[in-house]
Image (cartoon, rainbow, N blue to C red):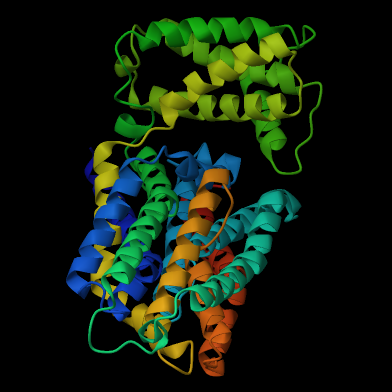
Amino acid sequence: MHAAEVIPLILALTLALGFECVNGFHDTANAVATVIYTRTLPPWLAVIWSGICNFLGVLLSTGAVAFAIINLLPVELVTNVDSPLGYSMIFSLLLSALFWNAGTWYRGIPVSSTHSMIGAIMGVGLMNSLLNTGSVMGGLNWKQAENIGLSLLISPVVGFVCTALLFLLMKALIRQPDLYRSVEHRPPPWWIRVILCFTCTGVSYAHGSNDGQKGLGLMMLILAGIIPGIYAVNPQIEAGSDAQFSAACQNAAAIIQSHTGGVTVDTDTATTTIEDFLRTDGIFTDKTFPALAEKNGEIAATLAQHKSLSELTERERVALRAQIFLTSGTIAKLSAMKKFPADQDTVITKYKTTLDKTIKFIPFWVKLVVALALGLGTMVGWKRVVVTIGEKIGKAHLTYAQGASAEMIAMLTVGLASRFGLPVSTTHVLSSGIAGSMAANRSGLQQATLRNIILAWVLTLPACIFLGAMFFAAAFMLVFHVFHVH
């Protein structure tokens, strides 16, 4: 590693892990809020247990969410992440999301770290498109923006209504007055403690397996950009897989070539054509298949020149990563558009899986440090959010039954959302669930706190879009004037 790589690497990793710590302040603190406030578990044990469950969630995750986050970024910045503009993208994302999350945590307002990061990604994408094309339309995944907007509206409603209904059901079926009184200075009955411990475990694990992957995606983007000689392509490719990769590449080449109509394009045209095609508003043209054939041919040429990927130079690794990213993305979009017959689609989709294994990987140590950062954040910053959840949403303090019903709904909602890949916020579901249980119990709601929470929820996306756009614009101008890069 060169000395010039050390400082940006340390700075970027510090910011990424700082973001995960603040993520722990917010999201994981929500998971332990009810077990701590109801005195089901002492704080030190609750945060350690939640940290272990988050760690297992991150450790056993597939990485799909991590790379889905990366796929939201502008294509040309991801393929040139080792450039000054790539660095600008990384630091803009990290600073934007970190500033907003830290500020809302300091105010004790529970907001979604997921929406903070996605808002920053949107801001970078919009500003990148505006600076390069004069239009913002191609810089944003509008379908994803629609999904996020719907989740902002639906997840609080789900948490509020379902928790209120579950609480009323408990009240009708379980007639133990102690469960419906404000928490006192003693632990709840053993069976309520079991339920709360179970739901805390479920919410923490679901958070790690889904939300915790944001940090994994950011870490891999940083490593691939700053030390590509090690992390541009998977350094742990299994022995013998290089030959299989080469064979799969040749098989795919024959299929792709059959759709080109004999048309060829040069490498620069291929890159531009595919980058345009992979934009949200990108359309299929008669150059799409020839461009794909050219990029796949470049991969085949690299494989033919070396017996193993371990022999690649740093420059070759960077080039191969970009070629694979563009080829894999194009295959995925063409397959979704039904451009391949069924028999060809099976082969080409299997080839895409082989491509993805080469660049979409997460070393164990990355999962470990991200999980530790989440746990550390919870241990350091849990109190502000726990006090808000327990005391400042309702006019009366939280009861055992309210804590149990809110955690149960949060666990089930986040678990199902993770199963179906839906963008639902742990923070939104749990906080609104507490409010729903308070309303169902006719405890009354603290208007000032609710107003702050709702404002934070509504403002998170636009605020982080603005911050991401401004940070990236400033970095873009700096790069343009210092490095003369456009």
